[in-house]
Image (cartoon, rainbow, N blue to C red; front, side):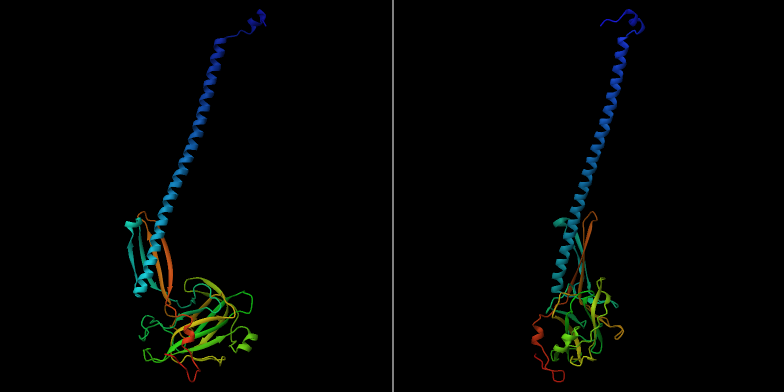
Length: 334
């Protein structure tokens, strides 16, 4: 459509300036879009790079941690072998540079039972399972006398078992104390076993003739490894006096070790302590070795493993090989 001349004069069109302005505006928009794309792309690139660096660092740390762990584990295995060959082994530093660029520092110490703590049998004890702990410190040389700490015939031991809040009538407890005549024990000594039995179930104890002098108030104790448990039952065993439990044997000679068997039911925690009120300054002797192994890599990453190894225990059939006929006239088998 043709415009009248009057309109053309009133609204003159200047094509060159209009298109120049449009072109300049378009160039500015392209520059802004380019900058936005550049910023977004840079942000994505930095994010990917950061994630990649983090993944590499985590992978490196994981690899270093695994190498340190394997070194610590190898240190424990070597310590167990060394202890079996030399009970006085105290530790060493092992170089694994040729294997995986690491080393292990192993320290072996006595598994002591500090005053105020109980010695807990590792894991839970099952029905009819026999567990053992030592009452004398000369485990490696039973003929050595006078090495402290050692439990004596007139001392009192406290036994704890089952966990507070558990249902049922609870397990009965059989305690067997191996004792030897003479101090020190020698090849000429007579070894006998004194047996004591306890049952928290009054109805059951009337038929099995077990002693029912068992406390069941709940007892919270700290173990030698720093754990804390509340036990349901406790007995205080005077080794030299049966007290109210007249059917139980007494320990009149030197105590060597004690063995515990759960009857009727099981799978419970069991612990024992020396009653330091009745026998002060005589805690339980060491019950084994504690192995601490620290694996380290050249970059400084370290892992630590702690393992406990109990002293060797006699098999359960031992209780049927060595036995007593009575307290007054013991029957022994060499």
